Amino acid sequence: MKIIFAGTPVFAAKALEAIQQAGFDIVLVLTQPDRPAGRGMKLQPSPVKLLAQQYNIPLLQPETLKSSVIQTQLATFKPDVMVVAAYGLILPEAVLALPAHGCINIHASLLPRWRGAAPIQRALLQGDTETGISIMQMDQGLDTGAVLLKRTLPVELHDTTATLHDKLADLGGRCIVEALTLLDQDTLTAAEPQNDAKTCYAAKISKAEAEIDWTHDATHIDRMVRAFNPHPGAFTSLQGHMIKLWQSRIVNCSDTHQAGEIITADHNGIVVACGQDALSISILQKAGGKKLTAAQFLAGHPLQSGERFRKSTANHQDSVEG
Image (cartoon, rainbow, N blue to C red; front, top):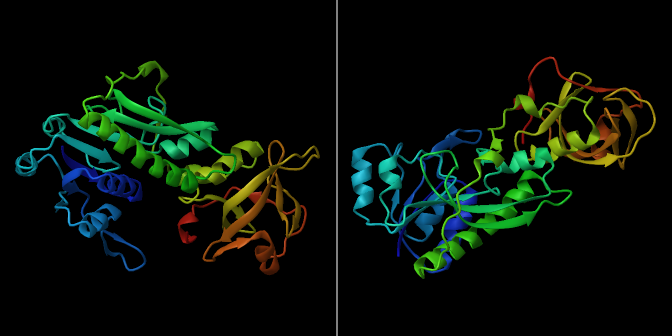
C-alpha cells in the first residue's frame, strides 16, 4: 500500500514516525515550506521535513496544492491513500480524489466535537473530561468527513495544552497505524457519518482572549491558565507590568475580597481572589523575564495582601518571552 503523508508540526511528525516504524510504504511526504522563526527569523524546516530527510523519504514543499502541476506530480506516485495531520494547506477536490482510498485525517478531538483549528485548547477551556483522536475520511468540509476510527483519552485535572498535545500525538500515531493496518487488510469498518447536530467549533485562539478577567470564577481562570500553556499564555497586569501565569490551582475561599486581590503571597503560592473562590499561582513570568516559581518571583518582587491583579489597559503580552 503506497502512502503519501502530509503534515507539518510535531503532532504530525509523531504520526509519520509511527507509520514509518510500522513498516508502511511512504512514497512521498508533503510539508509546508520552511518558515522564518526564532529571534533571528531564519528559515526553519518543519519537524515533518526533518523526519522525512532522516528516513530519506521523497519530499515536496508546495505553497499550494491547487496547482495542476503539483497535482500531476502527486498522481505519478499512484498513492493508495493520503494521510493528513495538521498539514496547514487546503486539499482541493482533485487531490482528495487522487488516492484509491481517498485522504484520511488525524484529528485531535472526538468528532463532531471540536471541529476546527484549536480542539485541544477548546476542550480544556470547556472543562471536557475526555478527548481523543478521530481518524476521519476527508471531504471538502471543515472536519466534516465520516469517522473511520475513534479512540478516547481522559483529560487529567492538571493537563495543559502542552501535556495533552503530547498524549494525543502519541495516541494519533497509534490510531493511524491501526487504521492503515485494517485498511491494508481490507477489514476497516464502514465510516460513520458525523452527527452535525452535535457539532462544536474550535475557533483559532486569539491572544486577546488569553487576558484574565478576575471577576470570573477560579475554575474558569484555572482552565485558561492550562489551555493557554504554552501559547499564548494567560496574562494579567500587576503594578503596571504584564504578567503571564503558567501554573495554578483552585483554592476554596469564603472570605470577601475584590476580584484580583492578593489574599496571601508566600513561597507556597500567590493566592488571588476570583469572582468565586481563589487561585493559587505557583509559576509566573514578568515581561522580559523568565518563568519563576512563586518563591523566586516574590524574592525580587515583594507583594502585599490587598494589592491587585487587573486587566491591562494595553496589549503588551508579546513582550513576554515564552
